[in-house]
Length: 203
Image 1 (cartoon, one colour):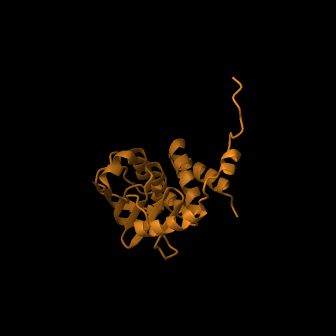
Image 2 (image 1 turned 45 degrees about the vertical axis):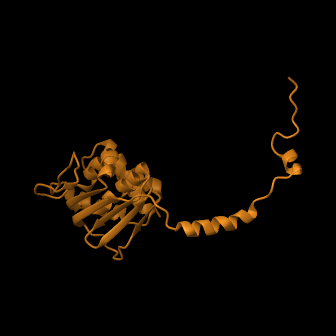
Image 3 (image 1 turned 45 degrees about the horizontal axis):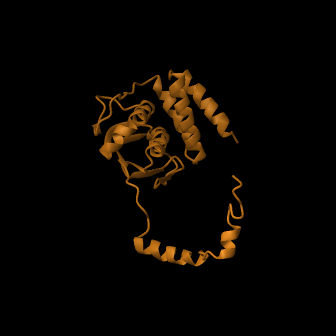
């Protein structure tokens, strides 16, 4: 079994070999490492994308708006991921952004995962009937049941989810009341044994 370090190093070198700068290659390598860590087919999809990258052209997107679509081709998931990462503080304000036609969308996932950690919010990534939730760069939840990850996302939504509790205020109060049974009343003996007790000031 290949180590995560080997996966990251080889992905970085391969990304540089197909024409990406060392800086972007490093971002890709971190992303593929994350995908493989979460049990997603990062290496497989990176190989497939790189087999096409010198045969077909893909579009880049420098400035991201609420609604985005390529002029003729498909968006490159790597350049798009870097752009989103660079602009995430501004994009968060939009609450939701839409894209048309992204090739190999799995390669965009780790960029969104890191974005989730930066802004401190979960991010919902949805295309066709596939849904992914990026949780602060800690895990990726998905409803995808097929082994083959789709190579094309025709209509994409990225939604920034507001943080809120999964429980009601009533449930919280009930649990907190139970926790109060562990509270200990402060006695004179406890006061004397507390940190700093018994120290005298000789000044």
